[in-house]
Amino acid sequence: MRYRSATARSLAFVLLALLLPMGAAVAQAGRPALPPNLTAVRAALDKYRDPIVAVRDGYFSTVGCVDYPEGGGGMGLMAYKPGGMGVHFLNPAFIGPKLDSLKPQVLIYEPVGNQLRLVAAEWFVPTAVSKEPPTIFGKQLEGPMEGHAPVLPVDLHHWDLHVWLWKDNPNGLMHSTNSTVKCPDGPYTFHEKATKMVKQ
Image (cartoon, rainbow, N blue to C red; front, side, top):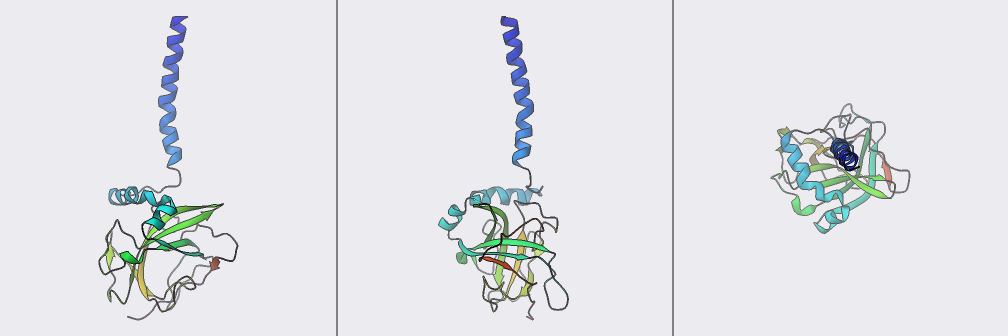
């Protein structure tokens, strides 16, 4: 009996050791594989998976969920692939000419049921602050472009860069829209056309 009991315990430990990595893999499902520098940024910003923590740290919701179901592009328009952006939380205190990888000006959430799920961070600089496109992660911010109406004033011309740290993006890790992000039908969902570019 003791032998059988010891054997059973050994088998239980083996099964547990096998299942734990599987559980970790399931927990990471949907999170993109990132280079080390972006993995570190994601880890530092993981606390904002709770939007209340974001609000307490100075991020304010723009309320509306924005998507671009038809994408867009062409003369004078941003080249968006079809997809969504989500709900933007803006931190005005972080707006300035210099960018900090750990202080994105915008956090982006996707409404899923009755929850907001953190999917991306956005580095955002108005053209009034910088006449040239700032650079972060070795990439220039895109633009200049108009503000994303109706959640931002059209005359808020700016540069921006979306980085999908928490959700795989078939359109690209740093593409503005994500084809897997969905905005629910409702009064605070805005199906938009591609944003107009502006001359600097």
